[in-house]
Length: 161
Image 1 (cartoon, rainbow, N blue to C red):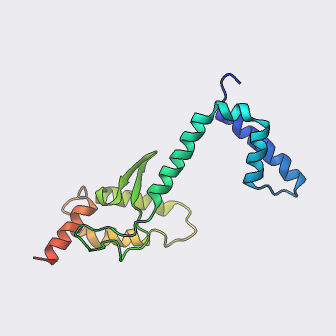
Image 2: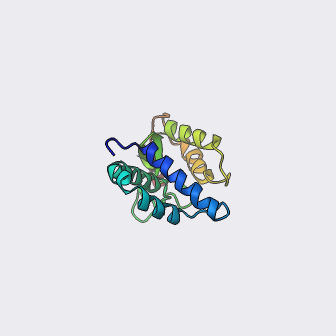
Image 3: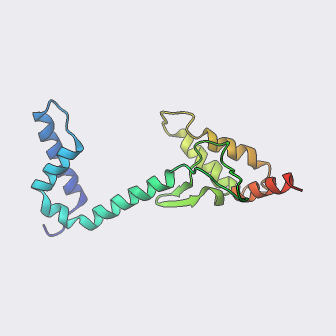
């Protein structure tokens, strides 16, 4: 195939899934569909391999960015996110752009929370830990452009003066 397109692969996968699904009362496993797609469309897959690898790596990068941080310490031995379950390590700042949660400004954190509040979320408390963190440390921000890390440092410094 001269110039394979991702839409060609999607269409081929849809046809494979539809075909398998018809023979198995509507259900098809991803493993079976991919095995059949590889068997019948190997040239198409080969032609798109670089693009498919990029897609897989972007998916992994998104997963890494969505991981929740087990510990965040500004001062040695002090876990600052311990009281805030579900705080992401990184925030999506735009298509394909991530930023460390600690380096996010309060303006960016509020925007992220607003965008994620409007999405349909099965677990409505998913972002409550992060919201609580932003709310608690907001009073230590001098401007909306201060980072969460700066506010945490101010709170810690005030507590130890």
